[in-house]
Image 1 (tube, one colour):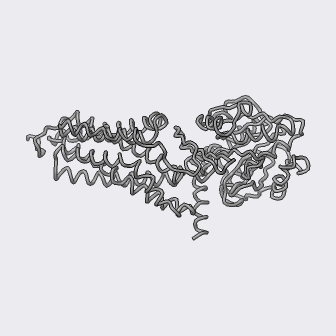
Image 2: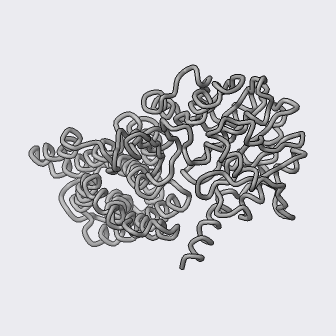
Image 3: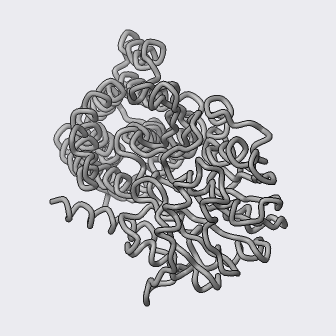
Length: 510
């Protein structure tokens, strides 16, 4: 029995190879738009797990709607021009994203970001408004292409599988090229406009009109006619996109400069001509004085950012006691460059290692008197592998017998499940664990050591540090986290516990 023949409407014969090419680049564009979306959202809502979940959920919802819509449209109008119009429409909308993002995201975030749930609501509204339509149009292309290529039912499976292979392979291409090359090299706007250009070239090329094809390169013109600014910030000095994050350097006032990554509400580094910052960094300034003043305190800092801690040590600690040599580990080399340029980070202040902190601890042979863990990913989350029993065991191996490990934890209270889990985990490795309130909102300082430890007496410190020492003395205590989870490499739900704090804070404000 002969195979059933399906004759598509229209007089243009669709070539299978061209459709493979078409779906490859539309698949790549979906992922390029998704990763660009993340970078557009970061300056307004940060890079938390919540924001990522919202983005991925909206993208998947839009793709699902696009698949269903594309199938219906293809059955009704099975012509190449229908598929081309989808690509042209998506490309045109994508080209407008950099112009729409700033006013729209500013509008939806106004007033909402004062609460954690506001971030969820605002990011949901902003993501939906910006990305549902173009992503749905891109999602509609694959089923449309399948409908156009199938003319014999006996080969439907082979042809469908081939198209989805090339579409997914294109998505792989669109995942790595933007994140590893175009975004850090040229910026998110250029990446978006390049994607828009590809989509419009694909769509307009099927119309076989040279003038239309010429019009398809218009999005690339925008790259020369637009500022690179992603989000205006009062006092902005510069902004940088790196393979790891989006960073902004700006003036807090006439004398203070701050670094924020992924948004402009949290501060990852600060430079001030004054001796104290008013933030948790001030508590770290007292730690070298736990040791005899004549002792050179060899220090490891995991999570250096732009170098606030080594700069403060060099300027405000070393002149008053034996030197505190610092080895600073920072995974993002761009932040170190910003530190050198804007935060007065001198080469003499720290020996800088561009590496992941856990990898460095595992491979180094050096030992230290003081270890400071101050690393955060996605703005508000401590990397889970820097909170586990195995990590602390590795730290203990590189601490001298009288050494101290200090860790800053963002927590809504000293009794939050996250901080209690870290306390409990530290206690399985270190004989002595302490907690104290650090300067700044939501900052708790954890201290772990082999031997009993207490903060230095105020009269043993320079006068400008005495108030900080007094504050630490008042809050310094042994924690009692009770029974519960011990964080391990196998199970460390740090992100979930952080989210729990966020939503509990939200519930208290509602």
